Image (cartoon, rainbow, N blue to C red):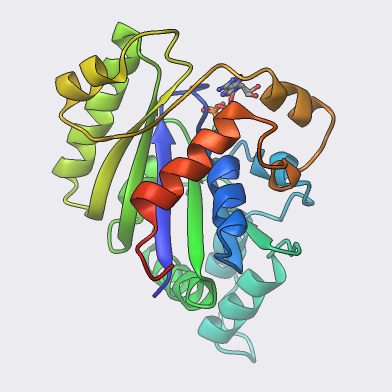
Length: 250
Ligand SMILES: Nc1ncnc2c1ncn2[C@@H]1O[C@H](COP(=O)(O)OP(=O)(O)OP(=O)(O)O)[C@@H](O)[C@H]1O
Ligand SMILES: [Mg+2]
């Protein structure tokens, strides 16, 4: 079964970085092929994976809603368009959700989109979803199963409050989530235990400030190529993945 991991958190906390590091860790553990889903309308996960920016699915939704009839049934049209919009890499393929919905009813097209995505996701060993700040996309994915929801937080008071709000929203939406984790980014010496006790969430990992990450990003190199032992943050994510997120059979 496809392992589904969703990454969420407040703006700028490190969601995209952690998503790319999780993909790297999965690939290093031999979990391939992988699908990355950029669910942020300001898509930038492709930069960390050195992949071309895929055309977002948002415009597809608009197009198909506008196009009445046609020789090819809508379901087939949508499925092949979704596939066409995959940015393909050696270990990771990427799809971008694009911008949200305009006014009007998109339920029918959204359902077809979800079906097409489900079918595509089924072809991968694991899927990592990089969400926009907040939970909008998560709530749209409400019908879908998430094995691990990773809430990225910094240990400031506002950071903890933001994670608590996301934790509560996930519970309110009654999302189908296997397990919710706290991933502390740049904890600046604040003990993870205090944050996990306040939040009542298990600590997945505490990533140190790691100048290697922004410099790797600025050099335009794929995070998938970060070798083991070069980046303490990347190694911490790989350890956490092996210890907590992958079952013995992975
Ligand atoms: N542990 C870390 N050490 C050093 N720099 C980091 C670390 N984590 C993230 N960064 C840097 O912080 C910046 C913001 O990270 P990132 O883009 O992953 O955040 P985000 O939560 O996805 O932001 P947004 O809400 O805009 O999508 C990036 O330049 C990234 O390189
Ligand atoms: Mg981001």
